[in-house]
Length: 461
Figure 1 (cartoon, rainbow, N blue to C red):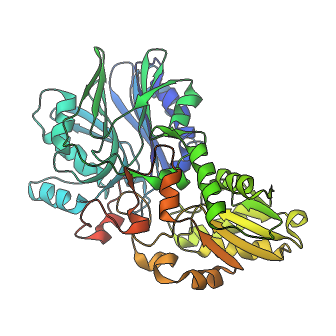
Figure 2: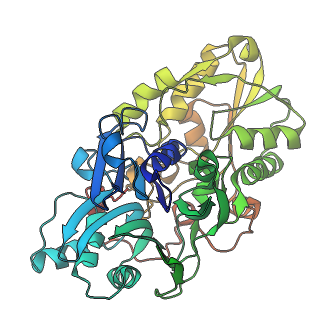
Figure 3: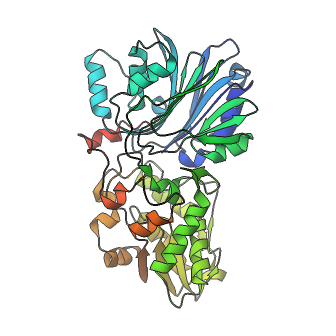
């Protein structure tokens, strides 16, 4: 999962893009980058490992200042190598001029695309699947930037939201199934694109609409053009965006993330009550709204029993298990005065590997909780995701390998309850239809990759 942001028509596009990336930091914390045109129309790319705040434009601000077109990226590799060569945006120079690209998603036929290009003589500079799209754009002989992008995307399978700079044109594209969100806004006449609406808010842009599945939008000096050159396919929006990834202050897929999570929590309380519990608390921050919904429906007090250190990143999107384990120990602390002697309901949005949850339950018990009832506002994750989430192996997924009772014992809780798949889908704002739930149900919209391990080196985001 990654965050992408782009703007065309603003007199300081790189600075606006950097500001927008701050609101998308939760979508990726391994690297950040900006590609922009300077006042003379020349392209430059700035990329850094780490956070946006860690000096992204510190040395290059003057170089990028004054240009009207920029795109940016915050990267969470869906398991690929976390190196500067894989940071985005990609910037390349071809016979048709410069191309810069930022990608959120995962291509399921990345191995085949790469092999085909290498057989034709292409030389790759990274291990990202995104680079295959750059090569395809460079080889296109179509007359307009949007036509070149549309041609390059023919035969590309999987999840992608793309922001692409070709010459002085900004192109946005979304895959035909619409797995990942991409919104479009207006900033005093400048056109802005972002993974989530919260990034529009921070720069003062007005939300205009979502980029539609299968749509290619081009923005240049003549205005905005839209086309649907890709085949129409059945909608498969990722339900996990509502459950975990997106920020609660965002609107994605046409609905409020906060409202969706409160509805998930209320349905969870109906399906999995905890009679006799004294209080409800969340595993902050992505579970806050679900825990509030649970408390409202159950009529139990909502308390702040776990305090999060906000200077530590999201544990689920750390690139290795060792990183996740160490981050848990410094990320949370339990409030003994709230927990001691109490029977508590601990609400989390998901349990993936179980290691984070086990450490948190031990922390809550050490603070004196008498009983711990774990409630999860999503269905059990039982299969890998090939569309941009770091769950590539069933062996890593606790719910794929253990029963409900075994999971409860493994993580150390008195009782455990998951939201049903039907209850989860019924809780999202736009209704249960059109969502991808493959990691919960095994209903994959595309054939599995021929070489899933290759996805671990080939993640575009």
